[in-house]
Image 1: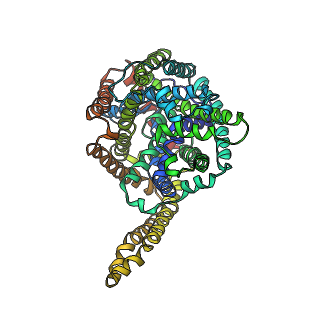
Image 2 (image 1 turned 45 degrees about the horizontal axis):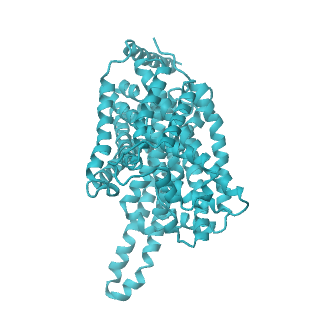
Image 3 (image 1 turned 30 degrees about the horizontal axis):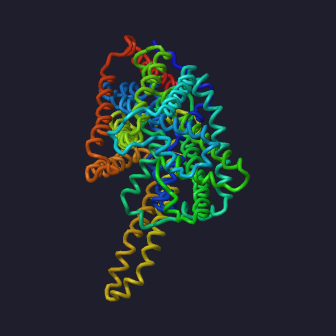
Length: 589
């Protein structure tokens, strides 16, 4: 007997919830910092390349898995092979520990939202945040006590999560996505307009867009771009598998994936960057500092730099107060919709396997994550948060993304996924990835080749003056890489334009993405052992970072081997039989 599952009330609600999951705190601070770090336009170009060739294909893969098997990630993989269930549990367990510290950051944002009236009068935003607010100690080991005001805000954040998710799918997640996402979009538009119209905004936007082509050859640029796009678009978390399992049998999944990717990365990251860098350009303009001293990474971007810039906005005394409140409201809404999606996905996963009461699962999860989050509310909480985030938000996603491609591409069979997508109405995989691989990706490669060649040739006159007898070798050394990239672009377009049976998507899932993600994982993971991350003690890195990874994997194995609801196996078998019979009827017609 098949289980009766909740369904989205509308496709629009599903899309808004998916976009809400993808759009988070990293869209506002981490993307902007990485864009500046890697030369603005250079990073954006590589980032778009990463979206089209890795994040979007996996997003559509996850939509297909959830929709085909009508289950969350662990049971979707269990239907492919019983031993593969653990691959679905690893990101789900990771999300429990991730949302525990993610909501701590939301608690900071909530506190700052209430501080909006007084923040413009703070003498040093840096000292206020790290000393007066966080009471930051000097070591990860020096936890001391809990900061009460942050603990109270953390409880409020978790109470809000509980209030929404306990109402169910349509009355909770979907309803609040429909309410909050239009508000978030309006807030982002306000920030963009205000940012680009400030004095000195041009300096900031120039820093945002100006490429530094020499950095294209640095592996860390590609690691950062692919890592950011995976985290940003919620790929490999299992969230999108859960969300698509709630969809009706006939739903266009390809266009849904494209819509979510464009909304998240196009509007809430790249376009929002204009407003963010316009504001930073204004701060550089009025402070007389170069952009290098204004742009900071991570937490400091949101809680130190931006409050300082907003405090100096021109106009009446109420202007800085209002825009400071709007900025932190934007952060809170963006982060809150992401936390809701995590809680929804985790709750559904436990219900899927164990059939515990949804209210008990939601309450237990919120209480557990709140208690875990208190570790990050101590005086050394920021240090611990930074260490844990470095390990679990990057490497787990890269590992799971690779596993998903291998399982679907080589074990279950990519043809089955493609056939399922092709049975859905609307946009087809061939139409999307045929266009992407034939035209868009080659164009990106040609742009890279052109500017690499142009940048390299600018150095040539000086080198020729020093060594005129080596002219031929100098020309070859400067033009070899751009020419190879250009020829690769034409070869790719020529190959792709003749393909009509989804070969482009097949190549991406079976070969390209696993190889790229494995190389990125290797580059980052072994780099961790060359130097201590951010100078933290090796003991703290092993205990908090390595320990967290060990907990995630251990708990995932325990959950995958645990006995589910007594009727679970019968339900899974009945669903597969029903699906097979449905296919036979389609072929008979």
